[in-house]
Length: 426
Ligand SMILES: *Cc1c(COP(=O)(O)O)cnc(C)c1O
Image (tube, rainbow, N blue to C red; front, side, top):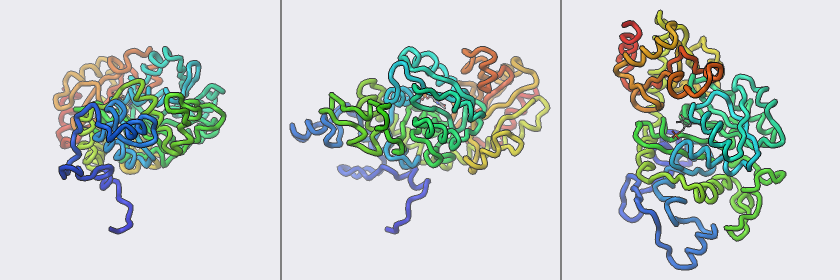
């Protein structure tokens, strides 16, 4: 063996996986079991006391899921990861480790519509208060910091318009405030952007999108960068204080640079319960093997479609960071040189009605609420994903009435352009 470090495509196929020691199975088996037999009473006690690593019960961990966790941690450059049932579950589990009732977190205003809902409504009922900031105005994050701020949450490539966030600038604000930076890297995937390289402390994903990639399985994951010191100032008692249910151990002291991933598992997943099915973990692992190939094709197709739209007379504007004229192009060159992702928006001169009409005329594009499928997808955010926002908030989050969002798939780009051409022209 050479001492070369494996490259990204090699890790996408191999990280975390070994031939099955019992059967020799080369693909990762689906360990479709709820529970695991202990070797003896001492073994059982040491697993329950966190003195040994091993399997107890699939709500807390499963060998198929463990391969997925190791693989995504390797691709993101983190120390450890925890797979959960959905992207939303990942967000709940992360914030449960960080916030007490009455605490605040700062979130970029340009987010997945479901995250805006989750932060505004569900989290409020837990006593976790979101304070919105503008990802295009770094000073707005600084101004939002208070003594109760416990985290900052951003998307690397932001919904719905595909803007690129200046992760390093916001990580500087987080560092100064003494709070972790959480980056939702769903739209970029680690193939395009690795937020930890730019100062993120925690990365979350909806695995449902580009990582799984085929529109067939929900999943989420939390990646611990291992960079944050949880012991300072008693701000994060879940990590720094003795845990009564684990013989008084302190997670930060015991687990060091992967303490956050452990807290998410042994406090978050154990008690909240959103475990990922091993079957879904298997589907998502299979998807990840082709992530680099798919993601490049997604980006190349998206650029061709965006360029076609720029030249179309029915189109008022196109917001896609890979276009040289786009306001995020400078940031795209820095953070996502291989491509600016496959999710972007454009606006129609005909406004709301033209958006609704376009969506109904497209044939190859599927009209649905998802992104990151092999298939090309379209949605009119103002009448669907962002319909809960008032008009001003819609426009602020990039989902005005004339805006259509595309998620470009891996079909032939000529077919995608022909479909848009007939739907826009007719
Ligand atoms: C889909 C999505 C989520 C939520 O993930 P689920 O798997 O649907 O729960 C969160 N963030 C982004 C950017 C998403 O696209």
